Length: 94
Image 1 (tube, rainbow, N blue to C red):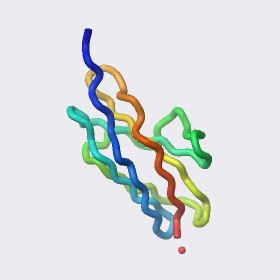
Image 2: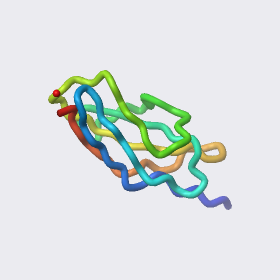
Image 3: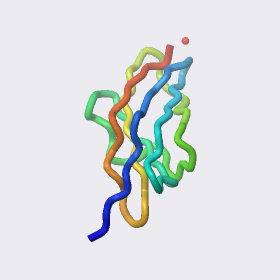
Image 4: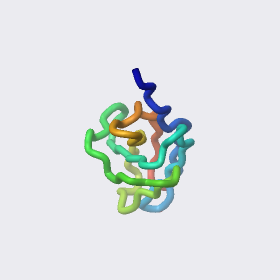
């Protein structure tokens, strides 16, 4: 029985004008992260907005100022995704 790799943790989001900067702590073996977004808590899409991230940060641009966005991150390790990170929310402050 194999052990599932630890997923990303400590996800945070910081808003800017039309964008949100995300950062997280990568789990052991994480090298292919995917970011999921929604506009309600627990309402993130099941389709990632970006995949293949090799560093634990991402800036989501082209967002609507004043709208709160919710995110989580998963890592693709081996042949499967890890569990989701914690959920983080932020809104773009212009």
